[in-house]
Image (cartoon, rainbow, N blue to C red; front, side, top):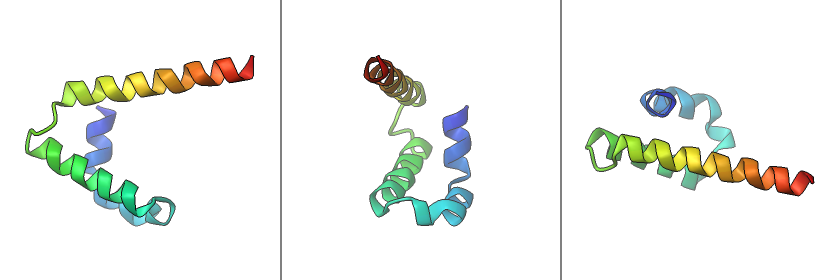
Length: 66
């Protein structure tokens, strides 16, 4: 999945875009990757949360544009 792809390429992501990530975002990404590897976060639940957040942002954008 997209989430796994991003997290598995964390080093590459951080090397090329670290100047655009805040320290807290970098820390959160690394923690989340570790939690996923240790099965402390349920992958399917994480995907649901991300999808819900995207939907809320889209809905907010639609309301703001009207």
